Amino acid sequence: MGTMSDASAVRGHLWVVGLGPGDLAWRTPEASAALAAADHIVGYETYVQMAGPFRPDQTLHGSDNRVELDRARHAFTLAAQGARVAVVSSGDPGVFAMASAVLEALDGASDPAWHAVELTIVPGLTAAQAAAARVGAPLGHDFCLLSLSDNLKPWEVIENRLVHATAGDFVMAFYNPISKARPWQLGRAFEIVRAHRTGEAVVVLGRDIGRPDERIRLTTLADVRPEDVDMRTVVLIGSSTTRLIPRPEGGEAWVYTPRFYGK
Amino acid sequence: MGTMSDASAVRGHLWVVGLGPGDLAWRTPEASAALAAADHIVGYETYVQMAGPFRPDQTLHGSDNRVELDRARHAFTLAAQGARVAVVSSGDPGVFAMASAVLEALDGASDPAWHAVELTIVPGLTAAQAAAARVGAPLGHDFCLLSLSDNLKPWEVIENRLVHATAGDFVMAFYNPISKARPWQLGRAFEIVRAHRTGEAVVVLGRDIGRPDERIRLTTLADVRPEDVDMRTVVLIGSSTTRLIPRPEGGEAWVYTPRFYGK
Image (cartoon, rainbow over all chains, first blue to last red; front, side):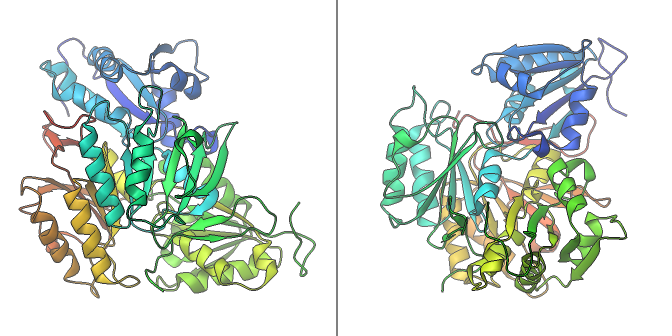
């Protein structure tokens, strides 16, 4: 089955591998198997390190963070020659990560050998799920995941989505909330949400969840400040029904959004 | 650390375990470890079977599907006596599943022994991620997950969320799309989305993804009918930017939502 590449009698394989949020206990067996099967590991240097250790016969291709499309094209070039290639991504590659970049590369490709590559998307736990699990079940009811990065989409599109996510009383998770190059967007996002949601709404800040420096902080929509957040933080904002349960041992409360709506 | 239950010198442990979408390759090591550590396995009968096999020393408590809160209370009763209890859920327990029910049970509990139980939410891949991975990266940009069940929330809340998710041009995933007791809601949901989104919008129907009878079907917003969907199907609806790439070997196309917005 499948069209063979002209360049090789062996059909190459490209896995887009979700490493999950960092903790090996959260990496799926499918992801581990794909990493073991690959001859070449391609990805942002930090994620390539996170994906290891690797065998001496495996070739690592670490690159800078801002070159997703180049990285995807490099992976297809290798796989089109019959190689077994893993493109690694933290979290779920299908959620604001490498799977879209890989398909963008394929979409624009005229070489039939690229289209003949066996392509497998290996899903993984994403940051919002990891942060949610640490505090309870804030995503227990209807929710949205939004990227606040306006590098590739106009800020007006993001504002419009924030307005509607707020008016729809969705729980929200913000990815790419802030960076040195995007200093004001998160503050503006909080303003939009505050216009339609009570200041008591629960806010969860999850930083590096599943990594050694993991940190969870609970606050409220009234109190949260952009300075509390950095690019390694996922921001969860509760809906009108999201509730807290104090923990007897102290520490942060449990947070959950009930399955029922209204009192 | 932690308050001891009066009933026991041993602090009980309750894990709310996400089994993932069915395929063992998608079950995390954390989930497998929790299942191995538990003395009691509590859950909807089908998921208890899916979670096995178990050792003879483990006690299984399978129950009917509609008794989440009873099941959660039963699990706390066991754990408050010092037992090690796993409540199992398919997918991610934090996404329209058992974690909210478990926290609802805890929220209403006056027994301090319940609050002293060590509680761990074990996240898992959810159906939308599994279906998305099979077809590419439809969730590659801002998206919403909505449950269409009006068993526990008024239908007006769901309609309002559908209107805003559509107006915000979010990709959407519908959970609990239809059942014998809820026959018309999905058709009404399609009507709402059609009012603001082109009929060419991509629709992905993923049924039992990760299980032996897995089935993926691609269609469009104009063509999809409620009869195409059952309660074991997750429905993904693309945004205005979601695109298709034909696969040379035939079969369903790749689907992805690009990271960029606009042409």
